[in-house]
Length: 170
Image 1 (cartoon, rainbow, N blue to C red):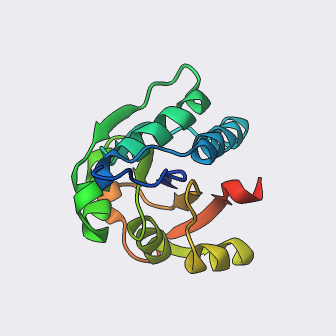
Image 2 (image 1 turned 60 degrees about the horizontal axis):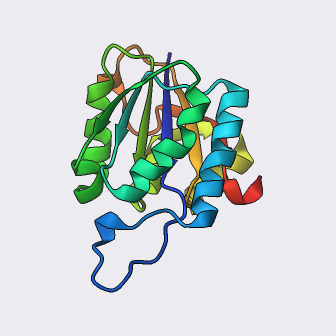
């Protein structure tokens, strides 16, 4: 059994004149949302063994915001540029770095968090699945369980949505 967490970065501030998109920070609401998601993660025991994170400032800040949920656990973290520049294929490829772990987290951007989550989702709570397939809001965390032995077996429809945490609804 494998568990996949897909976390979209929390709400970002608008870019200042001349600022690169890559350097955008979280807004005050984004920082607060990350703390709320971390509280739910801690409460539910959602701790990945390995993390693939986009290297953008806002995804790193989101990671810092949820890191408190991990307690004494220190997941191996890789900052993967393809999660910023690439597409859904790169998000799926990032799971290859999860080999040897039973749980992994991707922290990235839309539309790819939404596309990958929708593609993998083959079941789960009907209401949550419907919401996930319509929109993947900033700061949202999708938790998937997959009855698989290896990350290389991941394919469309193989995952059941175990939880979908939307900060705005907390």
